[in-house]
Each structure stands twice: as structure tokens, then as C-alpha cells.
Length: 336
Image 1 (cartoon, rainbow, N blue to C red):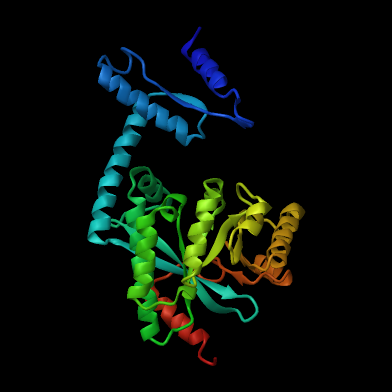
Image 2 (tube, one colour):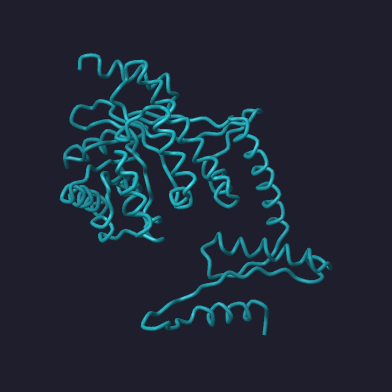
């Protein structure tokens, strides 16, 4: 029997459902493999390399197996270098925020902005958020980044208030790890208080995956933050684990349509129908609906025709520095 066959048999065996009381459970596994003497002749080194391969299996969707390779080693070293640089970037505050406006589709005026974290290294290299956020989640640095974003966003709100911009709201994205971290939630509340920001001007965007965790704990945290006036948006709706049950169960205020359903509304009747249905669902539940990823006039006209409430995307505004937001907002609301 080959190694591959052994691994496949193990995965199949472990995945068999089992009962505890009246409930059925399924466990999946991820397997990493290193070979003696092909990969190394040292036991500790072989274990480390098998561990690398195991994490590769997990990253590819779990319930699979993967062999160690030199490519994995290079990738791990590159990731370690980014992790070390990221630690320094957090300590030195070389991360920064840019803000992408959201517009009210009735007035076409800016009403809020989404804070997006960016990392540009000293040599000018731009590290994609997809890369450094993933590494931050694996290493625990995501909590430090979350606290950084909260601090900067609240400070920016306070600065805009001093400039006469009193009604602009900011939304921040929090992952499952961040949202269920007590220290981060305490930091959020303390930072709002310190900067004298009303909670209604802070929107927290959560993805559907967070509700696959302990939804009762998630709800309790949301209700706790609701007491400060903080509101919540469900991001990327329809992309992953969509369930109508938590739309009723959780204290949400906004529903964001995943851009995948909007990119081809002109040519794909199914996507157009799904987008319209999501807008209707949101409105029927008393939620405001936000369309993200607006890239052309047709998409904009489409969502306006179906009474979507808010929109953001490169066709409207790209992410920009805070001073640009201030200028745009003041021009936008000059006659208010």
C-alpha cells in the first residue's frame, strides 16, 4: 500500500460520523508528510517539515494530505520574513489607513467611509492585505492590527469633527478572532470614550463566517456594543455560509451584497435576480443594503433601480487618504 493510499484511508476513517447522545458529529483531519531520508535524516527536522506540509493541507481546505517540498520551505521562510517585518511595522506605526467612501444612492452624497489597512515597506514595496492579514491571523498579530485600526479610525473621526465634519461615519472590518477577543473589545469601547466619539458613527463589518462560530457569544458581544450606539454590517452576503436564520437572530443594521453578484448583472440574469432578491430580503428585514464593488455605470443604474440604499466601488471613489476625504465631504455637503 502506498503512502497516498494510507493517508486517504486515514482521512476516510476519521471522517466517519459518530454520535454523542442524540447528536451526530463529523471530524476532519489534515495530514502532512515528510520522507526519510529524502527530505532529511534528522527526526526533529522531519517533524518540522511534516508540520509545514500539514499546514499546507489546512490552508487548501482541510481534510487532505500534502507532502513536504522545497517550495514549502521557501514559502515558510518568506512568510517568516513578512511576519518579522509586520511586527516591526506595528511597533513603528508604519501601517496606515485609507478610506473608501460610501454614497447614499438617493442623494449621491458621501455618508460614510470604510477604513482599510495598508502596509508600504520602507523600500516602497506594497504588501497586499490578503498576505499580511492572513499571516497576522496565524501568528496572533491580528489583535495588534485590530487595535491599531480602531485607534487610528477613532482618532480620525475626532480630527474630522474638529474640521466641522460631524456626521461622517467610519466602518471597520473585524475578523472572528478579533471580534471575540475581550481585550480588543475593551480597547474599542475605551477608545471611543477617549476620543469622545458617539458609537453611532462607528460601523463594524463582519463576514458570514463569524456566525458559524458560537453565535450566542457573537450576539452577546453585538448587543453589548449596541448599548454604545455601535451598528453592524454583514459583509459579503451570499458569498459563503448564507443563512437567513441569523439575519433574524442577530442585531444587524446593514447588509452588503457580495460584489460577485454585481459584476455580471448586465449579462447574467441569475446574478441580477440574486442581487435583486438580496436587496428585497434586506429591506423586508428592516436593513439598509449596501452594494460594494461598483465598477461601471450599468451596475450603478441597476442597484439604483432596485432601491439599494448605499454603494461603494472604484467607479464612485477609490480608497484615499483622510485629507482627500475631508475635502470631498465638505464639497459634497456645502449646500446642506
